[in-house]
Amino acid sequence: MQALMIAKNIDKTFILHNQGAARLPVLRQQNLEIFAGECVVLNGSSGSGKSSLLRSLYGNYQVDSGELLLRQGEQWLDLASASPRQIIALRRSTIGWVSQFLRVIPRLSALDIVMQPMLENGFSEAAAKAKAQTLLSQLNVPERLWPLAPATFSGGEQQRVNIARGFALDYPILLLDEPTASLDKHNAQQVVELILTAKQGGAAIVGIFHDVWVRELVADRLHNMQALSANAG
Ligand SMILES: Nc1ncnc2c1ncn2[C@@H]1O[C@H](COP(=O)(O)OP(=O)(O)OP(=O)(O)O)[C@@H](O)[C@H]1O
Image 1 (spheres, helix red, strand yellow):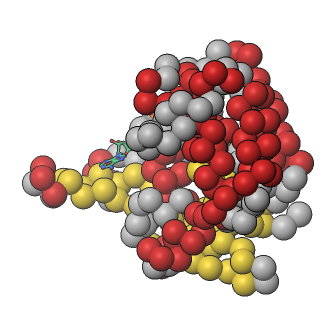
Image 2: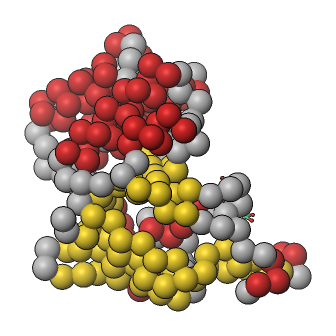
């Protein structure tokens, strides 16, 4: 198996500038390799830094030190020192992110929202539409909702549109931030199927899952994390 992402010696301390510059160490010497075709689940108590690590892997948080290496063919690109422009380019086709919330874009229909990443990556309109419809059906988003903007959808419906969008492209690296939170069991099972299919397709996946049964179905291994004490930084 081939490593697609390697995090080396990652440190991150939050500094709360509006609270007397209080220092909150959250990640210390985190090391993680993610191989093609596997799903690594971040595991630890609340506050242990799971979300912070996942956001760092997506380039949302700037880490203080360490490397976040992404395979680009035969070369490696360090996300920790990448420019905003490089990070945007990586997010277009290399790193996918699925959170539990949809960022609603006014007036864009559910179908358009799911088609958008495919159209940006050269799919024809017809191919993007067909795949979007398949995903929305699989996730039980009623067909009458497809032409509507999701602003008025229920939380669960919005979440399922978001997941359809997140799985629209076969990203080599996929980061999942509790994608099944608050879905019913049937729909969570559909998300499990999407994750297993992505793994079979060679995706390297890192995720946070609170449901133990979901975790057991998707995880190849756990990455254990522990909360750092506030004075340990
Ligand atoms: N943007 C931020 N600014 C300041 N502190 C933050 C920020 N994000 C997270 N933290 C702090 O970092 C610590 C780890 O938070 P994080 O959300 O990464 O943990 P978690 O393991 O994902 O928790 P949970 O399981 O409860 O979601 C917490 O003490 C939190 O308060």
